[in-house]
Image 1 (cartoon, rainbow, N blue to C red):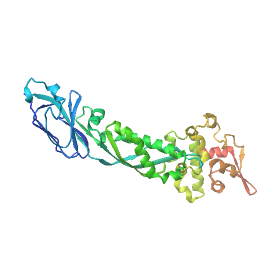
Image 2 (cartoon, rainbow, N blue to C red):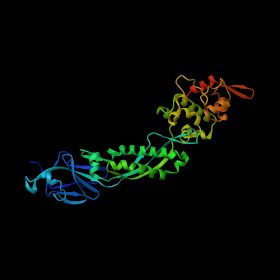
Image 3 (spheres, rainbow, N blue to C red):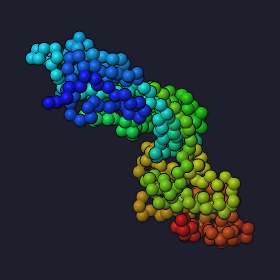
Image 4 (cartoon, rainbow, N blue to C red):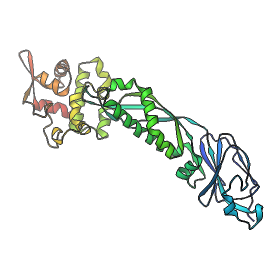
Length: 356
């Protein structure tokens, strides 16, 4: 004979558990007069045959057709008021799940009008908190028939929702402000993301209690990582590497930050990256290098002359003339000295770029 439960409860502290099903498998045999104990910061959702019957708040509840009226039609009069019936009870934690972490796995591309190449790559991290707002909706929409549901089961979904809204907010804000202004607006951006994401959370039966941007800064991805992400073609990658090499050769104090700091802030290597990131800025395909094209092109898409001055090379690689001359004098870049002036052949520049 099936066991009839006279007391239904889940006494454990629900630290990372959002929902716990009773019983874990199958259904529970209950009857009119059975008691359900719901602890503080819990709610209990009754289900039968996949249908939600009612939601009980904290306290000791005796099951009657008065507090769960829908039972009247389900039980009938076959065994009077003591009729056993089957149901499942989902205990839902109503506490706030605080200090959940989020971060940008890949840089977010935003406009940076009037600075450098006109785009910037941003990365950030922070925290958020959420709470179940509608236990019945959350169990129905998210949990289903699972016997337990923990924070780790939904965190990836919530982070994806938040990052999507963050990207929207950054896009809207950078239409009016540049990146340097943006980094000082973390409180305003946090509030905007929370407002945008709230409806999506409520659709799941959740309430987004807080959202904080702890840090927002230019990406520190290396040129090689950006290339592997498909954001740089090989030609642009070689140009960036060459520019870094020239800075190193000249022992430029600012060179230690690497190229990516310039990429993120929208400074330093703007014209080099303009062609590579043209697709993100709506430029036409004719402005981008094509396969088989000569590796050395002018900034406006025109071919460089066969013989270059240090000024030509500096402009092409977006480095200083002193960097170019230091690289020549170190022997890394081949050049011919005519009087007091250097001249670099296109083939020598090609060879220099191919060395990276």
